Length: 167
Image 1: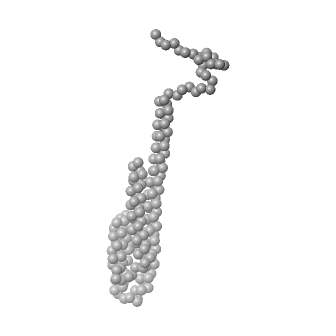
Image 2: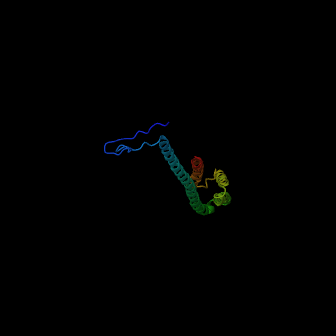
Image 3: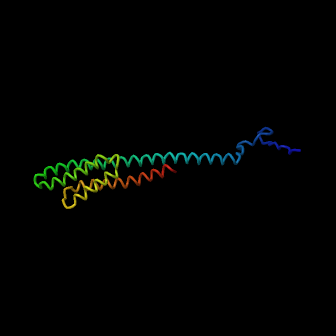
């Protein structure tokens, strides 16, 4: 035989009704489910934010590298004008070395978008050839160093973006 159900006889209530102002008890499983769903929503939101951060990092890499190369291009244009004005004063040896430097720098500028390592190698060769001749101005050397710095920062940012994507 089953146990008899006990009916509540509250003041102002009807037989079998619940006491006024009391909420029906929620099963413990529903609270756990709500907590798990809230946690899942937080994780989904965090993943969305991390994807946005990763995208922003990649955009920043591209932007910074483009700016660094624009600086190299503008400094190179000034450098060419300086070489042209100096060519009459310094003679054939100067022209040969400046032509070699021009070749390396023009190559670097033309391939940097498709082969950054080759472009950096060409710039390094140009800097090495410049030793002893002092044909590259300090602004040009700084612009080349800016390329190196943007590459290092870019690699770190890309690695961080990859980590954010994998979480």
